[in-house]
Length: 237
Image (tube, rainbow, N blue to C red):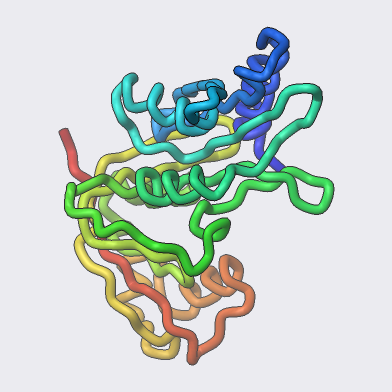
């Protein structure tokens, strides 16, 4: 089930595609949300020499508006086709330019939001040397703790992060808040080796409370699983 802001993104794309003139030139509309909660849109341009998909036009519109990382994107087809999944080319472009974006796709009769990396398994990853900011997603309850400096680490399971500049995104399903930051280190550890010190950096009183919270976030996690202990800091203006 989609969150309210994801549903709104679908509504925006649906509204645009229904307003398009009949014909074969413009048949798909896309809407994308960035880390500021701003929406960027685009429509496809069909031509016999080739033309961009709606998602690529939306990516360009977002770049023209300031180039903030995208966090969600959706495409809707004309003639009441509804939400359509991005094509292979768009998946690769999104993975290269916005590797942390979620795409809204139809699955089993429902709409779901999926990380783009899950839609392109065993994919080619471009070696990025431009210092592109990555998006790190946090539950909104962590916002105040991170701002206050009580939470300076996060443990992730099968959620790859990398050292470098980042945007921390806090999405409650209705509004999006952000903090600029930096991932300082990513260390692979077995769950069994996590300590009270790790718990304190996550703003928990002790290891037991911390592990209990991890088990809620990752129900299948066990002591022998390898997780990433990610240290970070916010970058104040």
